[in-house]
Image (cartoon, rainbow, N blue to C red):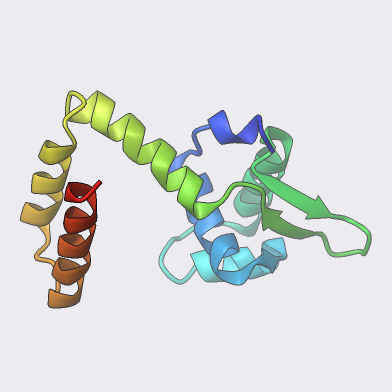
Length: 127
């Protein structure tokens, strides 16, 4: 798992990880059915991607039964932190304020999100 922390998942791998983070564990068929709701992709493509993810150490595979069951080896939180960190560096020149302003300007946040953001800002100021 420690080596997987430094692997940047591809967009397709992230879609699979999203399903696994939501479900906990799933077969290729279950993942494929979730993805097919919004993405036109073949079962064999999903299977191949999940095999690659297993080889990379992004997912674990239980092959003790006929149907293999997969689960994410990387957490949602650590993956988000890794990808946001890389995005701040590469797209925003290391400026977190530029990232936040861009994010808040592109999609209006709900009142609940604004309250959460304010709480986070207050906590950061008090540190």
